[in-house]
Image 1 (cartoon, rainbow, N blue to C red):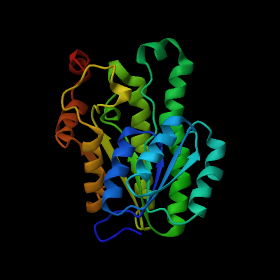
Image 2 (image 1 turned 90 degrees about the horizontal axis):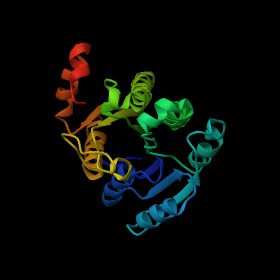
Image 3 (image 1 turned 30 degrees about the vertical axis):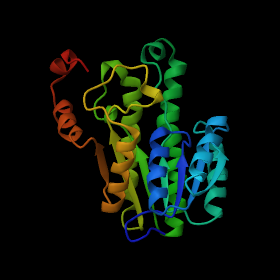
Length: 251
């Protein structure tokens, strides 16, 4: 169960090598989180992440998980929930893709969509049912401001995040009153390994800043969190910009 400050004692991360997720885990462990599950593809990076969190004093377990293998999600995630209550699930997996390459290779575009959206639908529903059965818990979904309005430069990724965002909002509405809290997190450009090859965007942020926003959102029981907060206003303006104007913007 969460403590008086909203800190979960147990945490399941879907996408166990995500820099944002690991920054969040470090913050929560520093508060009171004691048990962490890292779900991801088996790799040295996953084991290294587990070792890092163990060094902070948490009990950490890894479990083999692939967002693209929907048929395995109930079995894999069921093992986690069978071991005890999970106070928070952080859905943090996703791929950026290669817009230019994926436009030429529809199979690549499908992989982006299946990972970012279909995989999230499957795992989100499995975890939501388990959280509802235990009667409490938070499901935190890492979305993106890219889902607010698809841009020419990354509309494949943006459309997958738009679907994820709409799904997470609807799931939150469906779970309202059940004791399960769904929080959608919309970061802007985050400086990570995934974006290292891209030119930095205005209002860029860091995994640590997103982690702080997640912790604050949990404490406030927020339903939507923007990182940084100024992006709420910026994206509202972009969302309503006429298409002829939007096409000419350097976004």
